[in-house]
Every structure is written in structure tokens, then in C-alpha cells.
Length: 137
Image 1 (spheres, one colour):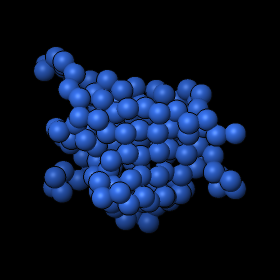
Image 2 (image 1 turned 30 degrees about the vertical axis):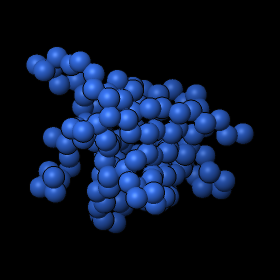
Image 3 (image 1 turned 90 degrees about the horizontal axis):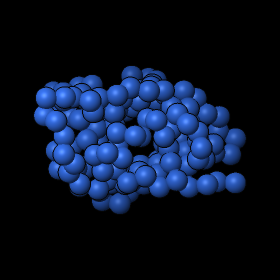
């Protein structure tokens, strides 16, 4: 049984994303970009976090509405980046050292998917200053 858990990516909700995945209470996680600003202490940079998520597939929807699905076993590392306008970008480093940078409207982490086995993937949550390849900014 798949139980969807919808998570709106406001500044505060994006901060809880790694912890929501670590608890394992839902089979599917959904995240949608929502341009919402939250008050922050400009002297504190607590937005950068790293965690390991165990999942089978990553599905994302681009701004033009195209949906893509990638097996987690192909992903070495995933960066979830907050843009200044409140949107999100994904940086993906693949097992063969290929790289993708995608502006997304929403993304879904699928924990179990038929016969596809789940694997641990290193995830970094940050803003654009935490990009793996900042020269692409």
C-alpha cells in the first residue's frame, strides 16, 4: 500500500526534509516548490544539512511539466537547492560521474517501487551557495 505524504517546500518545510525522510513513516514523499519567505537570523547559516536517504526512485517534474524518473541506484549524490525566489533545483551526480542540474517544480522520493530495490543516497540540502559545481550558477 502506498501512502502519499505531501510536503510543501517553504523555507521551514525544506529544513525538515532530511528528518522526515529519516523517520520512514511514509512510503512516498512529495515536495512542491512554494515561494514563501520565512524570517531568518542573517548571522546564522543553519540551512545547509546532509543526510542519507534510502529510496528506490527519484521522480521530478520540470517547470515545463515534463516528468522524469531515475533509479536511485544510479544516483551517487543528490543536492536539493533552494533558490532565492523560493523555487528549488536539483543537482544529481550519477554513478558514471555524469551530472545534471535541473530547475524543478516538484520532486518525489519513492521508497519502494515494485521490484526495484532501494539504496542509500547521500543528500545535501542547501541554498545555491552549497552547490557542488558553483561555476554553473
